[in-house]
Length: 140
Image 1: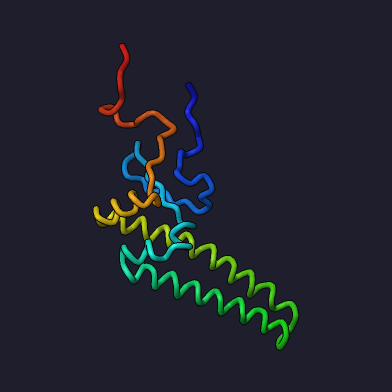
Image 2 (image 1 turned 180 degrees about the vertical axis):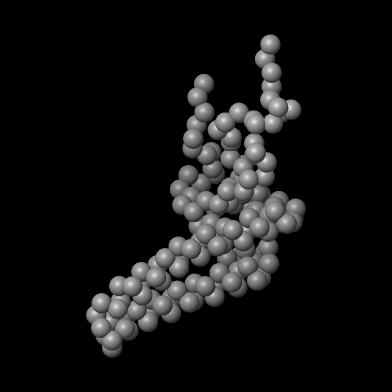
């Protein structure tokens, strides 16, 4: 039997996946895209998590508007770096949402259980045998 390199995630289309290494043999994964789309899930962990993502998204929206307006009032080529920076910031906001949820899951058992029960957090199957000699099954 060969080990599969693909994680058996509940969402196969999870784009931004943040991994939490709990032990050398156990890795948990958090879906950052879903958390970015559904801020109510983050709000139940703490309102400051959802507010931070909302503010960061608002800044990237203002950058998009400023980039379009700069094309009219400054120079046509200024839209390229400003809109590019806004898109990169929006992608990093998804990663930040996942990292904040991962940090909350590591700090609180209630947050861990809430994320696990909502399907945002799942256990990835290890692709290599356990490194701890006490956890290895010996076949004789």
